[in-house]
Length: 393
Image 1 (cartoon, rainbow, N blue to C red):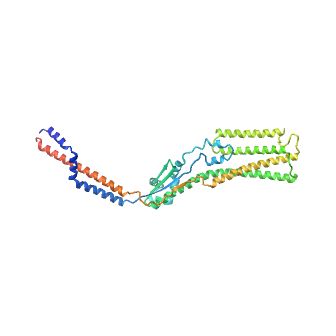
Image 2: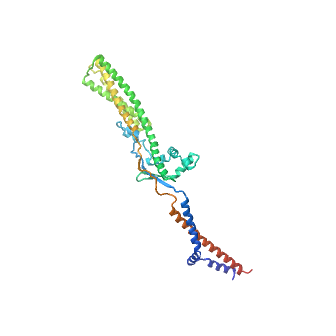
Image 3: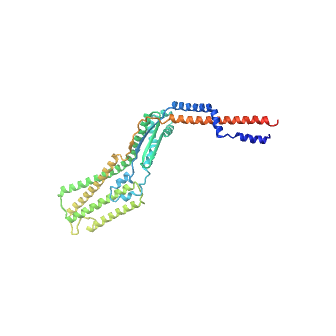
């Protein structure tokens, strides 16, 4: 037989049918059985030796944004301020913001300090403790319900539950600090405005009281009273618009269309006031009627006008100050906990049944592969012997 003919016979002999493969595994069944058994026992032993890990879970619902910030709620107290809010209150999804806050450095470091995680995780630096903590936590968002789920893993089920709940408590405190800072600024602003209005009101009251004590109370003509009331109302409106402009300057620029519109309204009110004053008198005194008014009545009218104006401004500032105080006192960002974390009863890792099944599968696969390797080596050895025995030396 030539060398080429022998190689063709060898290739045909190398092909193994399914029946031969089954027969091969039956012959080597002890190897397959013990190989599978050994890996199964190793996996089971590992599942028993490895320390258990527990996962605690808490669910909460973040605050919703209705298109208005707390500053917008203050501005809405003023007449005609609703269009002002449209251009500059666009915000990201509250749920996404709270997920970022939950994993922020200030919140995580509070957790690290509370549970002494540097010692627990065996780290020297805080940054390493934060990295390990972040690996042990999972934050997910259900976009349909807008519910955020926080999961934390630890070897102690009680510690896992306590850390998850502490995360939510610290998130609430951290986010509330931002809101209170914003509310405090508004409260301080209106507090200063109220103090000035109160002082002005006191001076007007003292002036009127002194006038009455000196001359006695006088009654002006009905027409003069109407004029005085109208002028007082116009000045109160002007003061209101000026406060609106000051509040808007905190959040927008003079180029804002709503800011320009409000300023035009203010200028219109001032022009109307000037017109009303000049119609009643050719001089700068708006309270002398055309037919003339006694000097005493004119002085009374001035004092009455100043008093009404001071009262209107004081009432306006008092209303806004009380609103700002309420916003500062209440909890504007309410995180609603749906499910508080409790110590889990079952461990998350290791899962003994799964590890054992995987070990058995790997053991069977490697044992079967070993049988095929042994068979291939045997066939190669037989072929080499045949070549060396049949070919001419």
